Image (cartoon, rainbow, N blue to C red):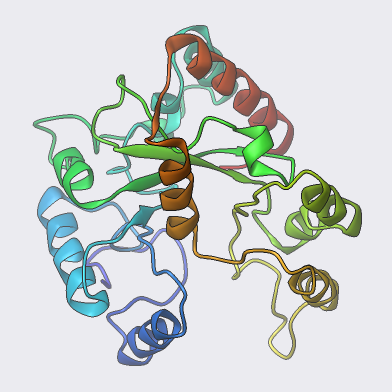
Length: 262
């Protein structure tokens, strides 16, 4: 939706007829349409519910996957809520307790609470980002359920590529060959609005790398399809332990300190 308040970022939404038609065309071509919050600013519970209903109207059902838009305070278990114990304390020191680290989507009774809607309608939520191309090696537990964060059914991780230059580092020729040799899986986190297009052409280095990757004969599927497959192969999703969560948090926090990524 195009929300009623000042947007925190630029970009189109499905409130524009041409944009909605383009997204539906992508879906018909086999791409998965996920949720990136319902608009470009913080939304109340009522606004989020309306956005989810509109998503279902446009795309035939609720979103299977969800990736938080960083500046929306209705995010669930986001900011300091991604971490526990001393790692949360260190994160707050490093970010100086910034108000932008306060998120309330999982806080019952808060005007931004929508955790029950997420749990009931969305299957997978993106969380930690790691530098290696093989997301499966970097975060072998996903998709997993975290009992300490019950409003998310399953979490999944991704590999660093937040803009074009970082994506090209992750997708380098050597890394592609490594991914193939390891029989791995890559879920790349990126924003196609950040450096891929100069108004006339797609970045030539990215075009070169993605063309090379396409010739490798990999299994190129939407993220939801991959995650469904992983759960089926394992006979169910993993339930993360406190020790496993602590290890993931340590690795992500180090990456966050180095790269400042979401």
